Image (cartoon, rainbow, N blue to C red; front, side, top):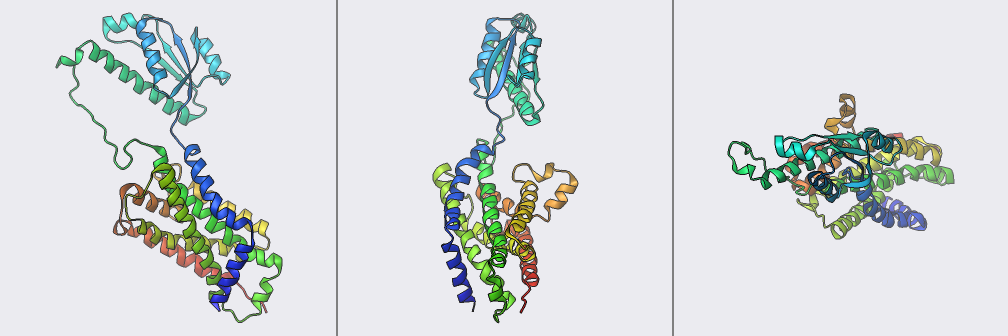
Length: 370
């Protein structure tokens, strides 16, 4: 009986011209666009410069800031008030004000002052832009110190020399961090939304009544709905792996079979959730709105864009019952760190529990009426 149910489901999927195209083109578009758009690296910060000194050293500092590639020089303002008007009008994001006698103070006292004023309406852009600018200032000071030969004086040299070494993402490329999580989001949307529209679509078409009068058991019926989307999920995952390798040169540091193992369980989780929503919905519009509501919460509280540890305690508690967060942890750990199954057993246990709960609920909530 299950064989004929699966045959019916695959025929319905292939007869729909939209679903096969969605399976092929959505991973391509998601992985081509999202890693560049969902990026917390701040670039193209519009800079307004107030050079009250107009010396060789101030000009050298300005050139170093612009050469960094993070800042776009929008204007050279004559005063701080003029620069502030640039920020108010949206023409500039950050003001770099070099105080008078900058060069003289630098040569005489080895200390010179600059002021950084940031538009903090966008806190992330203002904070990171200011931090980048401060780092450039520190590097400029190091260049001057080396140039004057002060680093040869033991009394002037630093007692501690810090050499940073970034593990797992050497160049701090944000795309490397985002792509594994975006694959999880893609898998969640397709393997979750399509089952959510499946049963309710049959309700609207009236074909569900034909199934209800057959001797098909509820477990067999739900398996017939789950297995096709389980296979579709693996196809999407494989396409995503190929695109990540071909476009970004990103391959898992660990065993790729570990990801497939966890994906086996995770697809059952989101497909089971979709079937539960479909069982309780009367129209496709209702199922779409309910599924979108849950997807929005799951994605925002998954650690996709911001670390879960940085969230309030109530949000961290919600994240513990969010299956999306566990699979994102698995993807990033295997892709970047090369983690093994033994190191990811808590995530496997959590996902298995979710799969059991949602699919049992899907079987229980499907009501046959004769």
